[in-house]
Length: 454
Image (cartoon, rainbow, N blue to C red; front, side):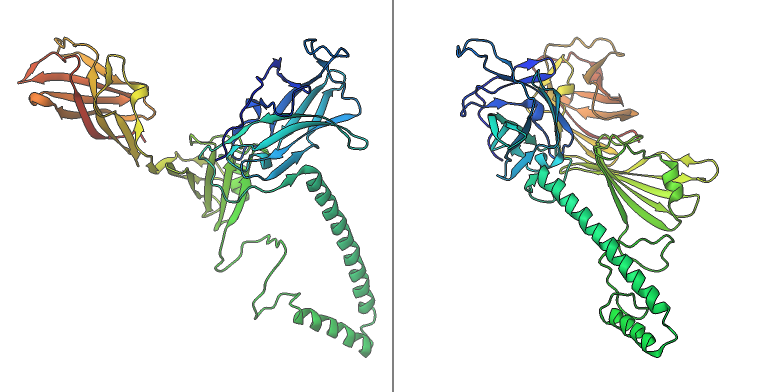
């Protein structure tokens, strides 16, 4: 990953607006934390207050707002992979005389993890595209481990993207005109069917279409190169499913959208991927997940929801029934969940500290594995048989209630690990059947496998 750009100028703000000093030297860099974001981010808005030197050449004179009348601002640079990016169409001048600007940064700027090799805000004259001033800035793309990187970063210039859309529209309009001419020609041929010569022409045209594989054949292999829509279910074996992707650019979806489920034909399957969509009724902790729906009958569907990161993940299932009368969304049940070993230190009670082996946990399905040892920060008297000592609290998972695991320590000392909710405590620390003090500075080893709440 590219090293973080060395920032030599601190970022100063004017309310929500970051002050952009156009008098900086070319080797000076302003670091913009507001522009830094996770891989795959989109729609991040940056607010700028662009300043310039007053009429006086005194460098100590306060800066004044740059008048942006007849001017515009764009962001450009090379990301961590050295790929060029530029945006100008997403700039909004909110107050030209005050030099206030909003720029919305698209997803294409967050395609490569790491700091941008170089980047700058450029102020330019709209007529003539003359550059007025540039300010070097730095920002970074973080690896959030929630996206799977499918492609390398691509060159992106939003003016080119807009031009491509216009060209595509022109091509589409041309195709419409060609289709009109073809329909007119077919109408002429239809009117000449009584003539043998005209009929031969029609046969020749259709024969050519068959030879060119421009029509579907009942007894041959067909390749469709354009989008094909089937309004009724397909009978027979097919490969693939209907796949849809919902990102932050699409309207907010709802996992419990009963109308969407009703519209699915029976005996069909859909796969939907949600990427930071703000999806409603999301049962997962992550904002990035996939839902596969198998519509069995008009009233019943089977759904699987999956959250798969680089090192951990979870799979849950549920049924949806009686859709056409009184819809019932079943509970989500975890069928698989896993994670690497992670520390328990942030949840440790203040009366204990870490021993020789730091306490850790690992989730495997509906079980959690615990290991490590603790040291009391001071001697605990332990004279009351009903006394319990909290070891961990506010844990990042929920135990199935009332689980007890007997632990054996040095000198045949025994105690019980007791769990409930997000809490684990020690009970009945004893030796030879009698309660004994828990000596400060000693070691209390613990290990075990516990059930999690479904």
